[in-house]
Length: 76
Image 1 (tube, rainbow, N blue to C red):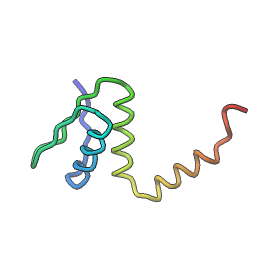
Image 2: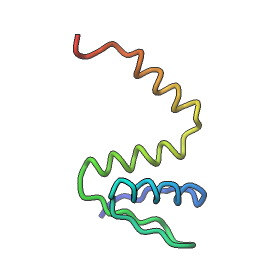
Image 3: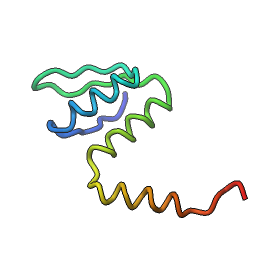
């Protein structure tokens, strides 16, 4: 059984359309929960990323990007 991921009603259509653009199997209809069929770990990470993108305050996302840009390169 897969874990439930809660997405607010306001955000679920945004998540749904982004998942469809990525070719991830999903269903969403009025007054029903968003259903997503994940086939690969990559799809799970994409879902996590999209949900994070729509649910986090913009400043949190900006701070996260800033930190990753300032992190020392692993290639050195």
